[in-house]
Length: 371
Ligand code: FAD
Ligand code: UDP
Image (cartoon, rainbow, N blue to C red; front, top):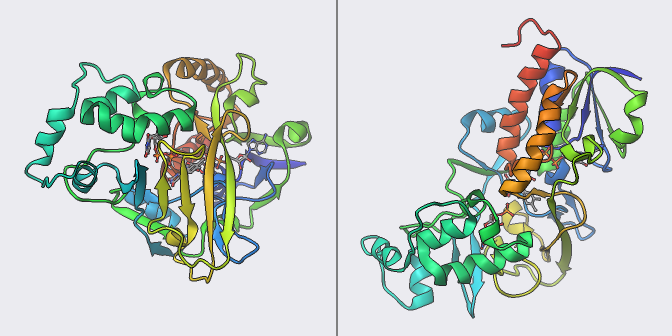
């Protein structure tokens, strides 16, 4: 079998590169070992007719106008601003922590003029912010750290926040206003007909062929290509020669409630200190679908299983660097995406990385117009 470019993985990273190269006249074969396209952003209708995300809730948000514009070629959008409540003791309060979170938890009546004074009175300033514990304790002190972050993080990562890079908890800001949205990006919308439809359109091009249910490591000798774009785990590409890079996995427990139109008041409820799962998401909030019943997912973190999250901490970064050094020597292979670059990328960051990688691949292919 022959193709100009072989792309391993039909998620955001692989699909964007595929489209870019096809638009420039290259024939592309996209393979994925799963039986569907879309990678972890794949969505489908469950047996009750509710649109669900089998690999956990995916909410699109970006500050990158170019990225929103790029994806808009393949989908219409539906406005959606995600809101999350955290169950702390017997209360359900907004997370990220904002004025109302503090007032509801402590029975206070703070406002925008007094909230920073409150944070200043409880925070424990740390000279250096190295870990996720440092980030939170430095901002809001021990009690809020324990109520919202310590238990959740231990469950999610199997590590104490003091063992994780600061970038993990830094994803969750501390607010000095009453904004209860999970994200503040300028563009917060969901693909109107879902992610899979968007991927179908992205990959619908005469120069793109897609084969699902195909594992790269079982077919790599059978395909001739001028270049490979690899979006799977980087350590697997090198047969784990330096040892396994930790990727955190999840078990998803899906449930349908036939006679419940709405189960919870917001898209996601986090459980920092109760249960073995971290959060419950009700998909109809995300998708806006009308249905007499509702479908939920609970996320149970685990070490084994499909790789979902790189685990940001210094020793993992050091191991990744060893793999990266090998990857950088490859003339005929480009590594891109959350698993191949071992980066805690959101979807929009994968699109950005894939657009950049496409330019690089075009140069490698000797494309005269590549910048
Ligand atoms: P993936 O989607 O992982 O795609 C890689 C593909 O490569 C997979 O389909 C895999 O099957 C395939 N593959 C791997 N190895 C091989 C092989 N040997 N042969 C063939 N195929 C192979 N981002 C957001 O922006 N907002 C969110 O709300 C959000 N929520 C998330 C919730 C969860 C639970 C998770 C896990 C992630 C979430 N993300 C979210 C992140 C988002 O999923 C990723 O940024 C994005 O989907 C990664 O795209 P990718 O193409 O790099 O990787
Ligand atoms: N986090 C937490 N409590 C929360 C929400 C988040 O401790 O209620 C921490 C936790 O370590 C989590 C990280 O912040 O893994 C990032 O949260 P985010 O919601 O961005 O995780 P994702 O959606 O990527 O799983």
